[in-house]
Image 1 (cartoon, rainbow, N blue to C red):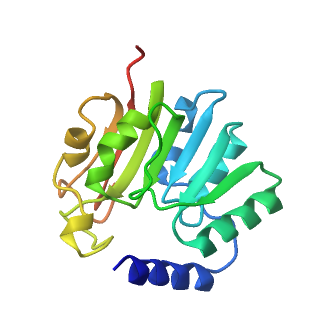
Image 2 (cartoon, rainbow, N blue to C red):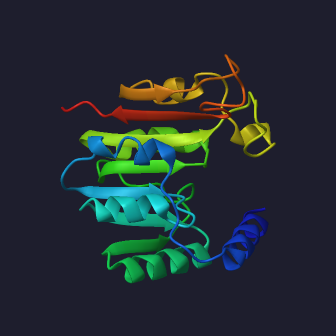
Image 3 (cartoon, rainbow, N blue to C red):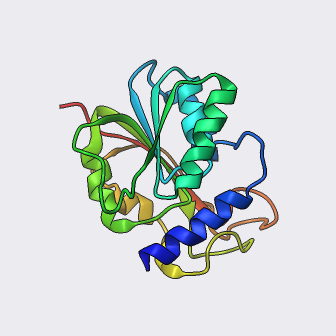
Length: 194
């Protein structure tokens, strides 16, 4: 299964068009909360838009993904932008980040519930988690179909209940469905200082 998943991702990244990838909305809209310095991780980074934003903000940024073409693409993007950034081929599910190792962790469009306690543990005191992914309640039909990769209502709040919530957004099916923040949830939360 792992090999098939990796081959699928590698095929996706080989076919990806050139151009600087965008950061996830949770990070782009809340970048003002980033610390002025520290070590930041873009976990399951894909094309690395989050890692590039973190590096441009002056953080020591790392991008992890198990698809080697994704990391090669990220390194090329960083070189073109003149950004110092470390790209690592690493399966975070098999090798989660070490405890108290990052000041910022960003996860977007990736959900592995069993990894959530390790993410909390990997934050240093005062560290920030930026998380954005898809929900089961679909209004606009965005995201994967497999419910294992989709959040239940308010699930991000439950998965990271030990953190201090700074930002949370999940609009469900309220109001005018053609506009707003649909089919996804976002969370910015902070590990309490010891």
